[in-house]
Length: 217
Image (cartoon, rainbow, N blue to C red; front, side, top):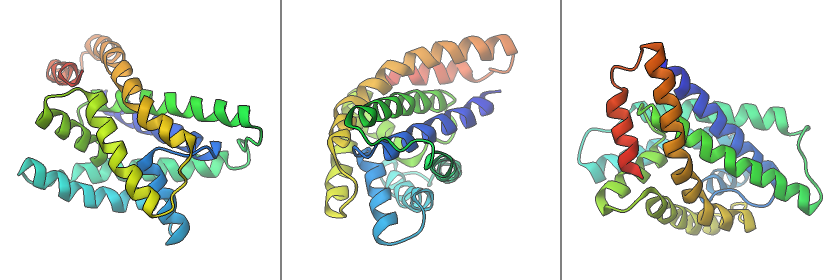
């Protein structure tokens, strides 16, 4: 059952990413990097999600001094498919032109990203490499998710700026608020998933997952 929530969380996350891209106010630094690469080099945004995931898997392996978490590539693959799918479906449906409609679109996307990320992370199964990096930095520094997430966002912000990615006010808001939203949704999704998985009788390992997610906060 938790694998169902894993996939659901990924598709919620990719929907949120697509909303922020369509808002035209700027995306998260990492997504700005992906869009910039797609625009300047070619391939789809989802394709660059997978390519960057491979690079980050290697970086995470070096930081943790352990074998590469190849399952993270599977997560990135699903995320990449989700982003391209949602962008295809939303490109004609959601094209905000007025500033306040762009703000609403971006705000909805930012909240959905936080919810989707928290949902799939609670399953403790193959995090997207950039989210695994967030957890690794959190563990290495002893800080909370807000600190590690913001730190990573700032790094990607610099790289995205160099590559002329779609950086705007939305990007800065993601850096400032993204970690807060994730920190907010983690305990909420943990409680909901714990209840559902417990009642379904398919959570033999969820106690470990719950402890893991609690430590993130």
